[in-house]
Image 1 (spheres, rainbow, N blue to C red):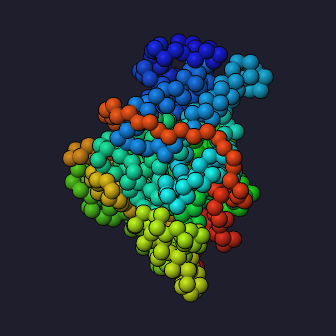
Image 2: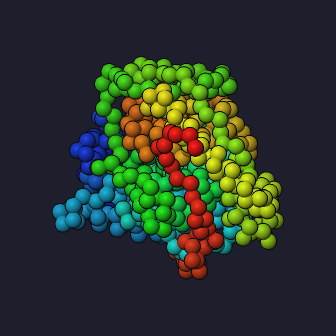
Image 3: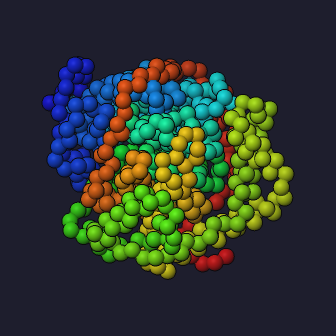
Length: 540
């Protein structure tokens, strides 16, 4: 099928995609072994598509064509996209094709593995000269003044920006009511990164960015059947991203498989002088994060998985069965399950969170009528909380610091490699209800957490995921374990049964950047005080 990069394949030409895996910087092969049958490039995982792009068997324009066509044909009931940017995307695809050409590779070496891959951005990430609205009427007409650091990095790596995906307004809730779940469009996608998860689940784009302030990446990943990584706090810069709650906003990645999400994360992470918290992160693993399982009979031998007491008992029967099956898979692969007690969440959470949210939203106090009713009530309360004594905020942050250490002690005392928790608590939540789960532990500890598909409910057919949480800065270890689980049980390959529902998605071209100075064109500068992730275990 060796299509030359100088000639995209015609619309009518069909091809069987055969992938043997991408050679990573480690010399490993990433992706599924053997071949993957696909007549539509949009159905490929990011790692599979990267292989074909790198070997010049797939043209970036061809991949973009497929993703845009599928979006136009099927986004009517899903409504995952806020806006798309075809003019910009095709220009970026052409630049990617040039970098991937044999002549450029011979001259400058291989292009980054993400070069030519389309991506969706949550509608919180600034792109200079393009709208940035946080899916809210409050920011109608707002144009970003610059690029978020993560966007700049991905652009420099050659990725193709397709568009912005919906978020629950200002990332406030956990439903994203504008968006239908690709598995059942009457069901909730969770939030607040619901549009990003839906874009990936519907195969509109192979990758998406998200943010996680209280489960906002993991909850949508669970109910949409995709894989996601909420990294350690400070691994990825939040500069140029509209904030929710500064001290627990985590920027993360979403893909079909954990290898996809890990591939993207490796190009998002790193030090940013505009976000000093990133200086606390260690260097990224040499060669990037693992993208391939070791395999074998007992690949999880010697690994200890903490199972918090009572977490499975609260699940509906159909989800409990899937969760028990996942635990059985861990054991089957050689992992040891250890009963543990999670530490209680910090005291004073609500005042602490409200104070940080109010500090950002007070700039919109004259636009209260433009918020959705639930958001208006929450933001009104958050702004009012700014009048609370400063001691309440400091007491909360001290309690949070102790919680971080208590979480680390739990891991250390039980010699755990990770903890396992359900991705969600409820089955088949309908729009516009919120999807809920035990998720705050990872945001208050700042520790990394993944969510990977474990199966689907026998009652509703909605996917259900499992969270893996680890030690701060141990993304590589978590990813390696998740790779083994997905190698043994590749549930992520299941596809949502979307039917034809066309949509004329709003298209926007680059325009004049906003005045700034912040890339978001709002007052988004964080406070000088920021909590940092720690591996400490001593009490304070």
